[in-house]
Amino acid sequence: MKKLCAFLTLVSITQGQAQLPMPRQTPDVSNKGLITNAKPAMSDSQSPAELHKLANDFYNWRNEQYPVGSSDAGLHTWDNRLTDYTPARIAERAGHVRALLKKVKAIETSGWPKDERIDWILFRAQLEGADFDDRVLHSNSRNPQTYVSECSNAIFSLLKKEYDTPQKRAQAATERLRAMTAMLAQGERNLKEPVKLFAQLAIASARAIDPLFQDSLMTLAQDRSPNEHKSLVEARDAALAAIHHFADDLEKRLPEMVAFAPMGEENYSYYLHQVLLLPLSAPEVEMIGRVELAQYRAYEAWLPDPSLADPDPSRSKNIPPDQASFLKAYESREAEMIAFLKDHHLVTLPDYLGKFEIRQLPEAFKPTSPGGFMNPPGVYDKDATGFYFIPSYNPESRNFYIRAAIEDPRPILGHEGIPGHFLQLSIANHLTDEIRRQNGDSVFVEGWALYGEEMLMRAGLYPPNSSSVGQVLRLARYRCARIGVDVNLHTGKWTFEQAVNYFMEAGGLDREAAEGEAAGAASSPTQKISYIVGKWQIMQLLGRYRDQMGKDFQLGKFHDDLIKNGSLPVSVIDWILLEDPAEVEALR
Image 1 (tube, one colour):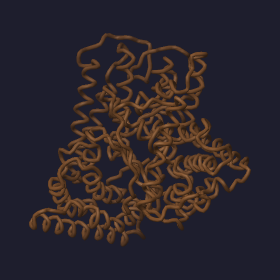
Image 2: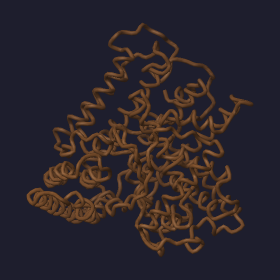
Image 3: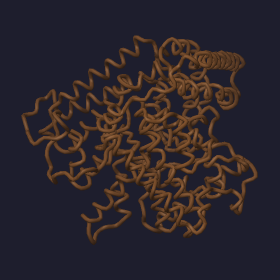
Image 4: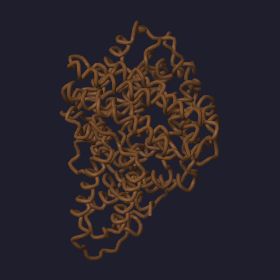
């Protein structure tokens, strides 16, 4: 899943994990570690109410500072603006986050109720994620994708939903387009130490952005006045010229760029602990990937015909004749899956759940999202609809995701839609606690979606030893390979080509999908570990929950109890469901 939204570079994704056995006690949380038993007096300036005020003020500040991210999340107050990337404003934002993080860390929480202590932990981790980018990743000076993505998302976020009239959205688009030339020029000046891999991805995205601007965007130009139409076209053409100039400049600078800039093992483990709330080190995460990979490669070998794990459209009874039929066939399987979930009492679907639609993937997003991506309803969205963007239909394609979608879209559909991302993130948007509503934990989110794929298989959705079962096993297998790629790339042990080869050899992917997967891993540190590590956490929690519930255990009740927490870290959910803070305590 891509696009928990652009805010994840700032708000980050918090999450957690179970690890070594810890004492089964319920100590209190403090700023000295995450937990202590001491209970000093609480002052008004360090009360839970003050924490929530700090958090709400931060979210309001963030929303205005990152207007494109706001639009993507369904808040359309600043639809006519781009992010200000001038050095002064970048430094001001970094300083604001750093000062707020220091203040939050200093809050003494040991006398607080459990729920308020959990909120403190979550908000602190959100701020750690924002601070980490400035301290370690240096996206503004190293990653040209920062600026190309700002352009594509600036327009995409105005098009994906009809939240306002075409006229108002066209006006907002015109103003954003006009601002792109200056923003990209500033980006060129900011890129003091660009990374070659990131530059190559940015160039590919820039070269592919034309259909988004020339075709998709121009649907807003219909019925505009001649002057409005002229202004939009002029702004669009100037923006496209600036984007292509930006790509040309990057291309000229490629020979002088460093190939890749890994963060190193120490920083990687810091991110796991302080941002993701995951009490595992980088080597421990990598070991989980190797263990799980061995298991799923063996499961494939147990199939009567191991080639069933490699999607083959020719095995499908109905091959769609065109793109429209492909999208319709993909979407039609959702009703079948919902009926199965209800009949087997596997999860409760809330009344407020919106529509889940399948759409074609814009060309600009293909370089780093070869399999498409999920766009859930934003945290501020009034429209509860969610989308899954899938690659352009081509029955002759060797792309794994297209072949899989033709043969049987249900495994991926269950991951992206119901019971996966769409369901979970829709629930997250309805949490009443704002700190928890704003939390976007990729490890839990991706872990739940991957868990759902195998859970549906084991519950009997697919015939035994079918190509659908094979697809589930292959999907799990290459998610296992993602861990080795992510950890070894970002700790500096592997080159990009080694990562691509590992995806092909260990993960069983074709080269096109492998290159896109490796690019995505390079661009989003730790995101690729989320699937298997999150599923591993959920399985561990499931077993403990089952033991605790005894004869009263119901699988559907576990699923409901799990995802009613939205997208919080599993380490935190352990505390909520089992009254066990051991996983959080391991993070001190």
